[in-house]
Length: 130
Image (cartoon, rainbow, N blue to C red; front, top):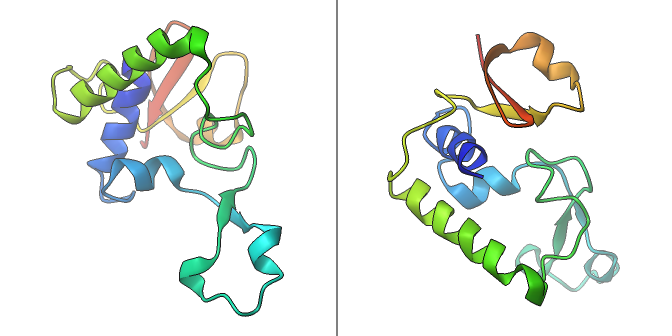
């Protein structure tokens, strides 16, 4: 969790990505809701957009799963919130050494061939631009 949060922070701190955590996490193609797409009376501020499934920068953001936290996962959610808070406020050293990309070790994305390998942490492999 800390390593993934560090990748997010590294992107926020890079001129190549948006400069806010929410914008970095939500970056990627979107589709308009069918409910607003059919209503020509709405202006742009009233339209609703959703990330295209499995097409965003962080798969956990657009995996199609509910964002409702099940009762049995409240403790894990609170841990993730504490890590995010501490990453945002600089409490953790960057254990990814400046990585801006990562993937699980059971996949091999095309983009990884063009990146510089940095480190493997548990079952995730971390990279940055050459």
